[in-house]
Image (cartoon, rainbow, N blue to C red; front, side):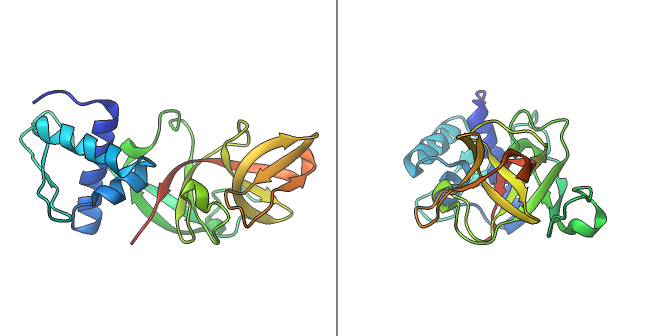
Length: 206
């Protein structure tokens, strides 16, 4: 079999993980939605995986089948990620009181740069980040850090409340910017916003 590009390997791992979690194959749309790419792009990757002998598929929905003949392919290992409830000021982020449940997540689906950080999940309420593909009920997977770059999607603690927004600086203030035209940016003094983590992945159930 021919080698894979990094994206093809990620898609193959996602198909494998989805199969084990849901008991069925993902659709092209679900693959595109997860990776934030167009359906046509996802379809092109799947055709490449077919040509290279890693998957088979038909015109029917959820017909993707992994071919296990590549003996060099390693088994995926699951990472148990704590899902936090309300985050309180002054308490360690991953304190037992914060953890509501855990989910199993394939570490291969985490981006480079996540290593060395504690990882946590947070359930999203509302649709203020809808235009970036983060929907009500989704779980954002974040690396724990108190620093972030401009434009990062962050988990921030503001006035005792936890929020997920894009981080910007405007006129000497922190701007927490939504991704939904129905919502407006919120501006705070620099000492009023505490970054708890940077979002690196998304977990969604159907």
